[in-house]
Length: 275
Image (cartoon, rainbow, N blue to C red; front, side, top):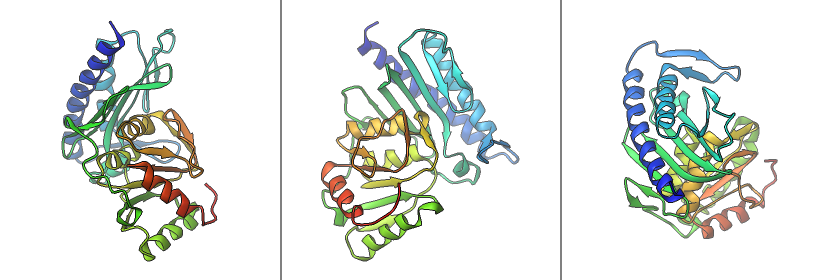
């Protein structure tokens, strides 16, 4: 099988698997007492996480039995093989949102070959929005090319931020930019990082800013970063250096185009904070 054929099949397997997983996730969300346990970092794990992950893992193993899999809940699967292909997945990215009956969660699946993402899928179960892209191809939402909106001026930008309490100086700097009319709208959507990145790829948000004291893993970043870059956007740290879609620690700025990205980096450079 050529890489082109493999990627085409990977995208189809991903589409089918996330749709099937989403049905179970939404069904379980309506049941009382579906929260099962908490991890060491105090983040929740639900029956929805486990069932969705099982569905996706089984779909991958049925079609690509030699491939490695790295999933948030099950961990490393089939890592003894020498295959250059690695699937990374998060069955529910934004579990707190899922638990709280919010809609800012998604299902994320990506396929890497030698650490390069060659297939990426993000699915939003509540709107049935299927974001997909692959190596060297355009990014799409339900087969329509992204972005739908692409403001070139920072003054028209909608900036979404997801910033912890430890970075209050950064929050105040963004509020200053909004008060000075240097950005049009400032929001904090919360929930899934992957879904926030997908919103930038779509163009509903011009930029997304997040910082994390912990390392952000591939299952949070890979599909979203690839989507944005394939539609012509940027994902960097606060110094303008490209963020690895496999693993990253520190600040992330994602923008739907290079012009706005450069302008936002320049504005934030005038403030002092550690990210």
